[in-house]
Length: 352
Image (tube, rainbow, N blue to C red):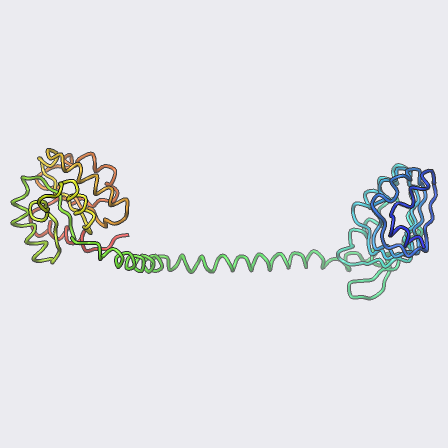
């Protein structure tokens, strides 16, 4: 059979390059290669009736002189837009004499084929059924015909778009719920969520860092503030608030370079406090202290940096501190309970 031959070679038609009319009906053909007719460019009439083709073979689309195509009694369910446009162009070329036979196919009259039904009654292509009355199967499985379906087109296909809109609406609603509900929950409880994350993260970090802190505070100051620090500051911080302070005159070891002592002391301190006075800038080592504080802050080990401006103006703040001012708490110091309250709040109040 021809079906068996084409199945093996797919190029049998190249043996007849000059043929103009080709009839390969009754051959149980269910498929043709895309290049089956590449040598048969003179074909004007092709009959592939009474076969098993589920769609129009693409091989036909390259035949420039084709004016009559018989695909009756195959298994076509519809004609796709590519071939509809192709046949419309053919009918224009041959002045409405392009013939297309599709009687006896398993045509469907459903939402998916509504464009084909509309095209069927608007095209200039000539069909084997002049009145274009072909049997077709409805969505519910019942039998009808293309004329009846076209006459009641709105009745048959009015729900097609509504079903599409319904599916689209449901999809949008589901997407809205999926994205909106979590967002609403997060937005309404954002501060509680933020605080919970912060609190737990802070607890984990502090548990890891606590063992490294030998001092609660590293104190940086000028020599003219030493007496006030020893008499007032240390008494309040260490005795009343039970915090351990590192100061150079008392806690630095003899025999170790000062640079190493400063670096180790700052690295071992939880907070850093600068007590600024007019003579603070005169000590070159204080510049080194500032650089080490900035370094430890970048490593996220140093938790709080506090500046006390005592008996001086803000202009006394060294420009080396400019890089970290956004992470610094500046207290306009008053040597009274108000000043101490400000310092205690800065040290003991959590901040984000």
